[in-house]
Amino acid sequence: MTHRATPASRRGVRRGIYILPALLTVGNIFCGYLSLEAAIGQQLVRAAELVFLAIILDGLDGLVARMTRTTSAFGEQLDSLADVISFGVSPALLVYRWALSDFNRLGLVVSFLFVVCGAARLARFNVQVHIVDRRYFVGLPIPAAAGTLCAFVWLHPEPFAGHEVKAVFLPVTVLLSFLMVSTFRYRSSKDVDLRSRRSAILVPLVALMIGAIAYQPAWSLSVFLSLYALSGPFVRAISFLPGARAREAARARDVETRPAPAER
Image (tube, rainbow, N blue to C red):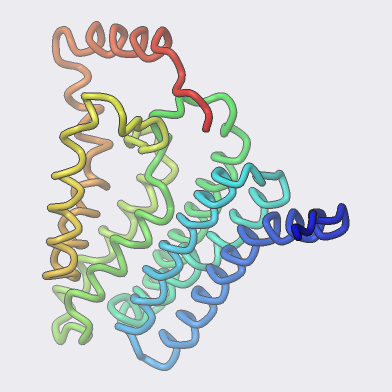
């Protein structure tokens, strides 16, 4: 004998589906909060690991929302507020405790600049989300900027003895802050169609990256995230080469005329 789901039970399941992305976002906030506590207690590796866990949860909440078709304006705003904590305040305090505290007010100003630029980057993303080319992010995404700082901390968790080495992270933090609010374009994976022939090369490349991260996580993440952060200025520089703009225009026309993948 089969039992049909009642309307009340179906509504309960639907509510559960809607709340799942929000729970992942709350987990993101919790990781950021714990990272702050760990940084204050000088547990720098733990603080960096919690930021990376927040990055994973941040990716999962958007993925789950799209797969279950439960995206909402509330979820978008909650996600941005979570990102300010986990990828703005937490890594800023972490890099301050790790390298910038010796520079007193200058270190505070530089770490605060990272928070402000991250918040501005998120605000700009929210107002431009429906009008920009979905193939690209405008400005370095704040999770990538936070991950870059945390990867450096993970790579060398003990604070450096000399002021000269610590001083390097003043311009590094300023540079990452600038890249977040810049107009440099960074490649997004939102339009990747794994069924296309062009995407076939991505499978071994992603597998190689995952293997490298599993083998040497600190070194691999430092290299990959640094290269991604620098890719925006690099692409802008080569766009001024002869013929580069014509190729980009042809590529944009090809994307516009390509049929959209069927919804499942």
